Length: 329
Image (cartoon, rainbow, N blue to C red; front, side, top):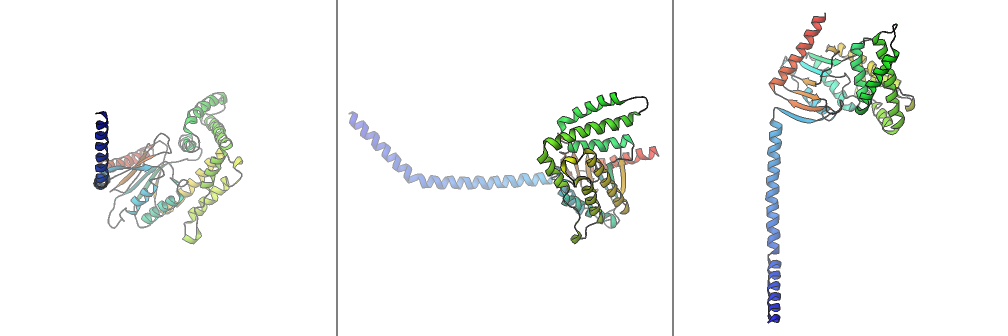
């Protein structure tokens, strides 16, 4: 009896196995067909979501410097004065925005702006500036440089050390602004030197990227780019261990002055700002690209929008800046 049960079990197993072997190709075919249907539906879903995302009036376009190309696309789509009389409005922390992260995109940005200005387009650029020895305007520019070269985790320590040093340096014969500049210079150099000496490879690579030439005589480049190269080389083209924070700061100052002269020659309206604005933007009246600081000031998060409310807000922001300047006058 036990033997017959074993035989029956073996018989059932063999027939089941043979059935599985017979149906396996069909199962495989069904699996492939199902997969193809799923893939097609997924592709359609991704396509639909992409279409929806691109049709939104405001959408995310990346983190600095990834969206520099989007800025140039916006500028290339900006209507010429014959077709449109709207103002091209730009707010940015420094005039050399993106120059040392993507030199090619920066040069293209300059070319677009110059071409638009030469064709009669009204362009206004508001930016953080350094005006001589004026502490209130110079401080913002100085802090912009600090945030670019000193790690976020050390900026609070730098500020605390600066306050302590100011207290020890202060006396009746020194004004607060003079004491601030001296203390700021000392502690900035300290932290800058730490990264230069302890992160030598990364520091050298970064200096090397900045020194990549802008000017190319074979491409009929603006002399502006050659002047910028000369300034960079003057301060940074020397042994890395001898480069100071003051070299970086002065280089940025002199490059800013060259850009100011260049824009003024091309009838671009410049508004140097003393106050911190948390948004950089480029608006041509139809679209606006804007960016907010992320965890780090340099990691700005970019968006592009055709939302009328945002475009109006940028125009209002410019009106507010112009109004405050007129009140001071």
